Length: 494
Ligand code: NAD
Image (cartoon, rainbow, N blue to C red; front, top):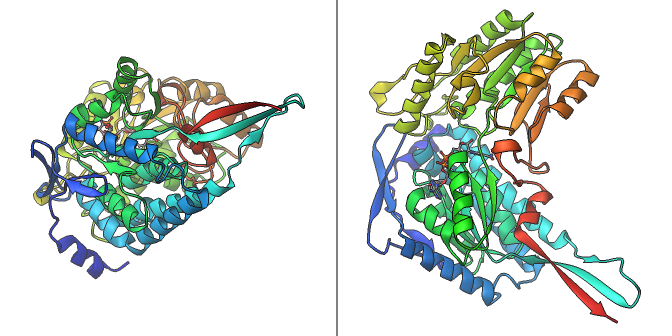
């Protein structure tokens, strides 16, 4: 990746974008638009259609028509595979362009955006494209005069609502398995991070996806998202975002057609460091990356550091050293290690958490203030708060920013109790050389993933999902396919 290539791409003017419905760009029915503000410098970079319920109806009708006439839903799995593999190739070929586009509206640092957004999306389309002609139905062990067949049928129209952090990676985790299974989709990206997903919808047509199968409606959550979730013709909703929105989606489902809702929500994930961690220096380095990468705007971020009291002081000093060494700055500068906070609103919310934590008695060890204000962008350095108590807001609530809450513990039982004492259950980390303890911790921590002697690693082969109020259902791995199929039994008298 060359800085000069990035600079050429960022200088290109961005055309205003419409919805993507039935293979075409459409303005909103009332012509309304939303400004897209770049977190890099706080300036308007383009505008997108501000969708209306009528736009959602149009997109859902397009998805429904495509599903019913079988142009995709009844295509041979091998044919669907070909299209998804082609789409993966197209994304990979244009990865830098797509990554830069995504950085312009969401602020993730370009090295990470290239890998975790564009290249990861390509890998996801490839993974589910490869999977789809390897999934078999079942013949049930019935009596000999009966043939019981269990078919995997696509569910129909999938409504997908995704957040602004890693829109492409998270969007692909839903779009790719849904399409592989033969469904049609209406996708609603976050209003502040729609550009890269609109690009993928266009590329899907170039890859041979029939028009109408994959539609994108842009605009606000309270209008477009709500209309999609209330639609009587959407069969399931797949969502990644906050718990507050997740609750609303369940309500909308209850008020409409009882569509199934799969919710990937927030976290306040504990990262637990025992005194017998195999390499404390490495633990500090990886733990710092585990909270601060992408300005902490990562659902599985290890945002609660629980440290054994014997090593607390030296470990916190080491974490602060790493925090202060990160280069925060323009996300399209290859030298930056951490880019912008996504929006002014998010920046203010992050800073507010710091003020409240201090008021509750926590100590600010580093960071905690806005930086690079002269750029007009939204930047905040890695921030470490120690002495955070279980009842404090910073211990209980997700910041979704670069703010680490540190709490010390005395023994394993207290560590487990602290780890489990929030309403979330998304991810966790444990650092210890004691294999038995590692297994006990994995067993006793209520979370969708527990990392041992690392933090934050994963690939497509393992599922991602939460327990407790971090949600239900899983993205990634073959398990993700389950959401996008209905099981249908054929009971045949022989
Ligand atoms: P959000 O809930 O505000 O928005 C997510 C999406 O929902 C956006 O597209 C938004 O427009 C839409 N939305 C908002 N109100 C809506 C409504 N009333 N009806 C329908 N749709 C509506 O969340 P966010 O701020 O974009 O994302 C941050 C959150 O996402 C954090 O809590 C983070 O932890 C979570 N997250 C979870 C995972 C995971 O895999 N579990 C991954 C990434 C992010």
